[in-house]
Length: 227
View 1: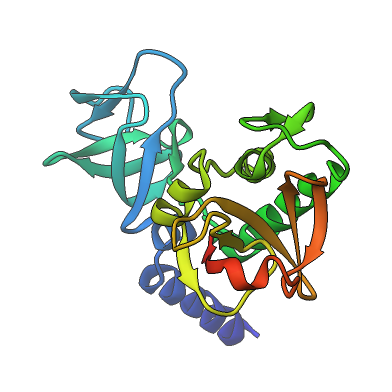
View 2: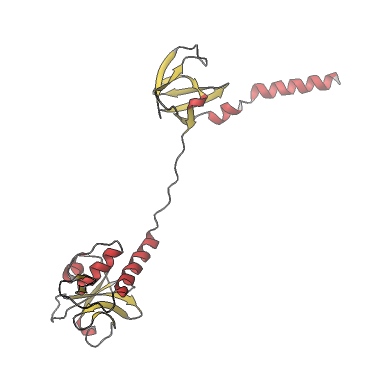
């Protein structure tokens, strides 16, 4: 019995000697920051309040902890090494950042612009108008996209020359451009809403939906832009 007890004591002593403390193992090489409400944290030359102060660490100062024991941490910072009270330091954490939801945003603003335009069906045509009291063609488009959080040039010609990317196949939200005065000069713009239809503000009907294959509009088509 005595031999068993002696063997157990020797094994325990060997483990305690070889294995580092939980504090030492978890703290080694870890970056912490100084956590004080005011003033500074004293760094001393030994782990005791009687130790000589070798530096005063300001709030949020980063330190590298090599070990912790009995309420004291051995730290190094800016070329100096010493001991500080463990209760006044805390591990530095890194905030996780999520990827921007660009795809969802793209779908949302186009759907929003179409929804705004449709909510104004029947509003009369007004040259230079860009309010719900009356829209011209570009006024309806800029108003609808503005409500969706996208700023566009004011005129149809400027939209065609400055905004978006040219496309040959249409998706809901694309802008369709027309020359109503002959030639290639853009004078009209509409929003494609899918299923071969577009919404626009026309001089004869105001805000309305029409087929892109309409006998008047199809031969006057100039191009499309994706915003």
